[in-house]
Length: 153
View 1: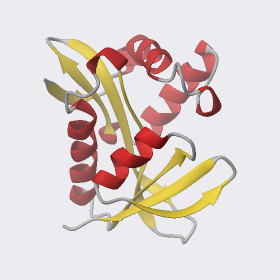
View 2: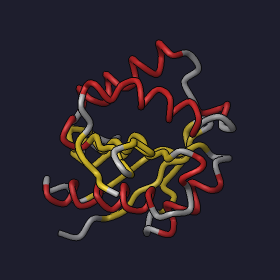
View 3: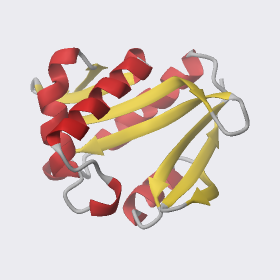
């Protein structure tokens, strides 16, 4: 498996994998192909160096988007993790963990002291996943749970 930076021509794979990965998460996903395409473009524009794809034998199987240009509620520049998803048939192989570790290392490289993210309050698998990496719950907003982790440089 390799992890590389996303390129603009990864958009179709992003749409396909996003759609499959979010199949059972109706409350938390973009619905239309146009919305997902616009989301891809937004993520790419936010921080293309922190937007990554995992490939196995040249085939994309997962994506992660970290944003070191994000300013949180407290006014701090942080590593915001906008996205991590893996094709369902490739889950439980450590791909999500490798993507997350790569994003966290990127945040440290960029000098960020805090990583944070928002996850759906009923997305229990994702919440457990992030807690296993040391993220702590740090508040709620609507259907979302905020989680943060201090980064050690």
